[in-house]
Length: 114
Length: 110
Image 1 (cartoon, rainbow over the protein chains, first blue to last red):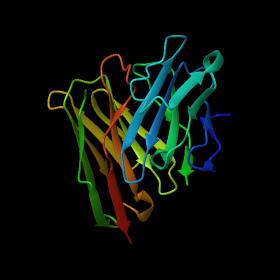
Image 2 (cartoon, helix red, strand yellow):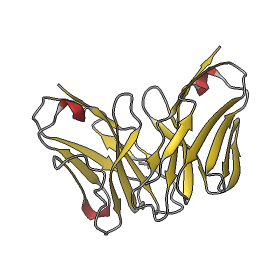
Image 3 (cartoon, rainbow over the protein chains, first blue to last red):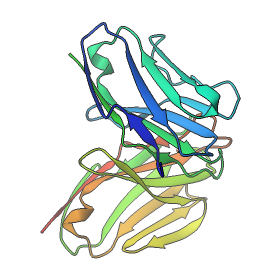
Image 4 (cartoon, each protein chain N blue to C red):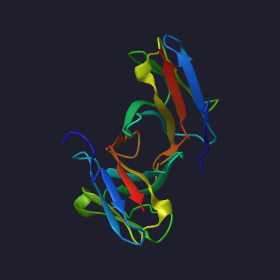
């Protein structure tokens, strides 16, 4: 597609379950970012992939969060043993390169943990 | 770590008014973005700046590198401009992606 695609758009899950969120970046974009926006909060950086380099995981809030990017394209963000505080909109963005990179955002996945 | 401050946090104005939203940051950057987040949650990139000024339609973005400050202006504001406007900066090599301000919630009343 022409833009960054995320799925699902909405996800309701029970506390303690694992969830997987998917991001399809724009074709050819080597940089991919995951962000989280909790209710009433600003955007929070989670993890960043650049080409084949080891990802920068410095923003992941706990070891329940992990992400991978297969073949340098599609990325999956996995949250294990979800907690209510994980409820947020999870946004994916991609860009051609680090600098002067212009990041394009997906529409996000709204995760609700009940 | 770069600190990004936006002001005001909330702004309500009448249709037609000239709007200014400010963003300041603490550490030198390689690029600054202005983003618009619609009530439905979707985010649109408005501008990317590294110096000077850019204009797109009724939107104008400026940046002063020496003062570590950027402004987003909206001329002849319209109710459809109502959204959250977010400033985001990329520092140096950008290994931490973008650092975001908390956003400015703008409401334009008819």
